[in-house]
Length: 333
Ligand SMILES: C[S@@+](CC[C@H](N)C(=O)[O-])C[C@H]1O[C@@H](n2cnc3c(N)ncnc32)[C@H](O)[C@@H]1O
Image 1 (cartoon, protein in one colour):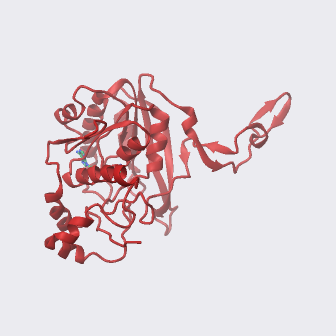
Image 2 (cartoon, rainbow, N blue to C red):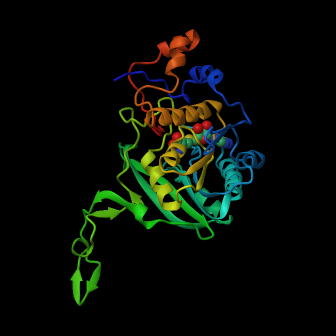
Image 3 (cartoon, rainbow, N blue to C red):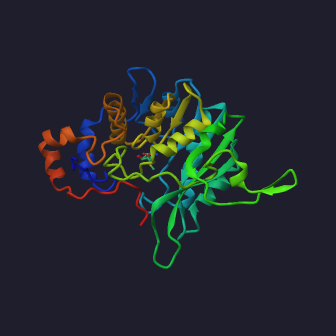
């Protein structure tokens, strides 16, 4: 197996800056899929003119938004500035969604700081046209805060709607076996428990997802260089539940392009953007690679392998890369 990592691009700005020259998109530009399905913009999620440019009059049925969380891993802004900024991209999301649409937002909750930004975000959302539908928790394998505290192993996912959007219940079935008994119901005068009553061996996901593997370098879908990659399985669960084949999905914080790749796999269309041209290039390359090879990522290789070998400047920076593959997940510790 090739061991050819690239450092997390948020941590190694020299490598990131060097990769700019290989990025096809410049700020303000949109990449149009040659087969007409998807779009990737190097645009600002909070800017209405940028969102109009990406959408060009079309409306989506589903938005999956995964903004920077304002936690330690990102450049920290004042809490209220962060919420004001969220308000802006929520307005652009609302604009880009059809009358009947679903919105899923991944957000962090810092247990050392009033669980922020989650509570202030929830309050801000009360003044928008979106209604609350579910508060989903996804369990991570790795966590933080083991010494003297309950280990934080959760990722929060808020599900909002406007109008009356599609929800496919079938998509909610998982491969999780039933593990808990429960005397839930009386049937013909007899108390029956769920093992006797239900036809399925497995449980529905509900709003606690414990069956989704966090991405790490041994997985084919891994994209080295990224620091906040969401698993394809999580994107797929949302997409199958809240859209149908052929529908348009949006994701304004593309990064490694998990939503885009999952949309491609599930026969949906995706219009996505990232303000950083390097992640836009990663997204284009990930889609091209998937179409050419059927592979969803680079495992412990990386999207710029060819350039690292042929560009002396990049090669010298890449030479300093440790041979140990870094974990590309958002590090909160
Ligand atoms: C948490 S990551 C998204 C991870 C993504 N869901 C995935 O699975 O790879 C957030 C991304 O948003 C981008 N970003 C930050 N501010 C932005 C803005 N104003 N408009 C568009 N993208 C932005 C960052 O460059 C980063 O790539």
